[in-house]
Length: 173
Image (cartoon, rainbow, N blue to C red):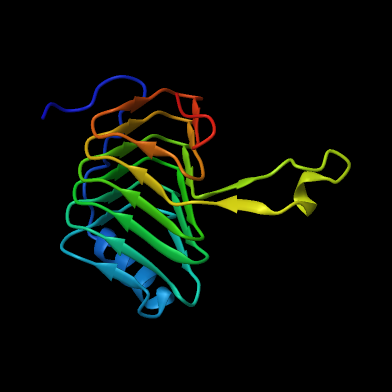
């Protein structure tokens, strides 16, 4: 596979000695709900929040970009081997978020298995229920900067989701 190019490429910082220490701190804070298989590069400011009953799995060779966030309020977040998550990207799960091997999540992108509903136009959106459905990003797929992958979306292997594009089960092409 060739190296990613263009504005959406997620390029790692040179590895530093603090990456292991950052990962150890995240594992300790997760209280056994963060599983790490192999070597994972963690850049500055990464946050992983794992609620009771939820789990996060990071596979070998994955990269967590500067200040990215993984929020597991429930269910599972699975980051496959060789995945690159860009700076300030957010992965959020109530059910299940899976990122396939070698996928790239661009900077400021959102991958979430929840989305708001708009059934009642008289009520504010924040007072309406959330719709949840698992999300899957296939192997070697690329999600551009500022893109949003929402409830029920399935990005096929090798597919490209452009910058500022939205995908959900209701908005899939």
